[in-house]
Length: 70
Image (tube, rainbow, N blue to C red; front, top):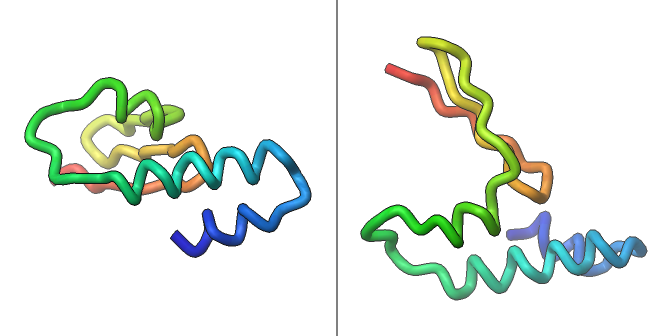
């Protein structure tokens, strides 16, 4: 959340806009009971799958989350 709050102060209008959008999404977040395609498309840029090893989830704000496949 700090990354997005910092983004609100950025000189780049697009960075401020994206930061504001992410903050709104997180503030409205609830427990997910089933896959929400609209939420997925608002947050995820891409998924990179390494066969049998891991998945890297890249968010639209540049954050990357590594998930190890067990």
